[in-house]
Length: 54
Image 1 (tube, rainbow, N blue to C red):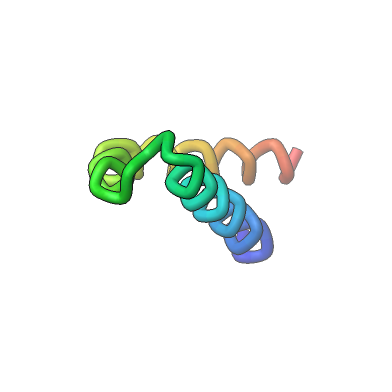
Image 2: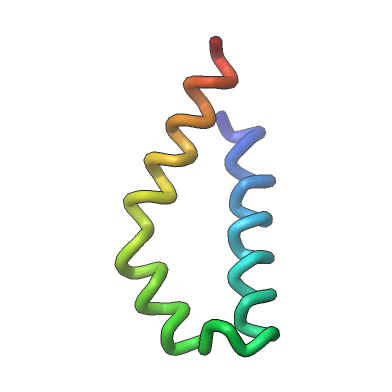
């Protein structure tokens, strides 16, 4: 599980920083988005882990 969490975390952080650099999301909005959607990210990681195990 830990082997997949690192790359997924890097992809998510990179995508969010890219959106911030492009001006599509401001850092203040980024905090509120993460605050609201962090459970969905955990669910997504869990689903990816289940698919990997199958």
